[in-house]
Image 1 (spheres, rainbow, N blue to C red):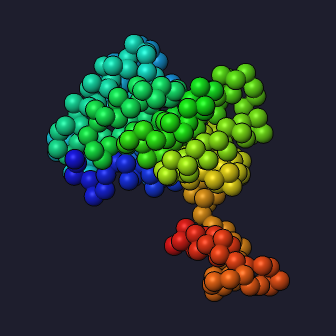
Image 2 (image 1 turned 180 degrees about the vertical axis):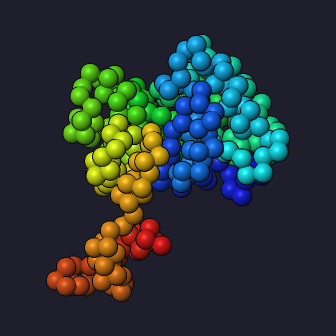
Length: 284
């Protein structure tokens, strides 16, 4: 597919940090790629004004083109929503790009994802190895989450809490979207795909708030988080890494194998041991 060592769907499935960059700011593409995110998402939707969208697509196509790449930008592209005036032309241009050996396109993020038939049609037209990443941002998308997660080519789902809260007319504080978060995690698990990416935190400079939000997402069962600025990346990475206390606990129980036993007064059976193994795996 490309000159990448791994395919786009693998990159997306394993990412903990996913960094948005506006599509009409091509001077930022390489900086975003060098910022340390696991995957970069170039945005053609919300971050780009209507009058700048055509130019943004042209900039994206140029940045991800195969000519003289030599380690150039690789990214997922968030297109405009299905049914919008820009959707068909963006999809056609990006799929044409994906046919060129050595391109840098990792996949497509589809915002306001609700239409299972439309998403399936898009996935069927994409070459193998590209990621199809539905961004669930509405009540209809949440209701259809399991079917969206089962579309071939979808390695994981992503959550857009702000648009979701707007759609259901709620506040966007964590307690009001808790059900949606749990539902996406359960749907992803039931479909056998990677744990979803959580919604971005709008706070950028307060690293403690960013880390707390990311840790909450991790505790819900999310596998990573969308980011809107490079300064958020270290806080998100810390939140999804096991703490020293978690590693210490995991090491204390990992020797318990087979039936139930006790470690420091705590019952340890197979599920507890498996959780400890997962913590140590994440810790490297």
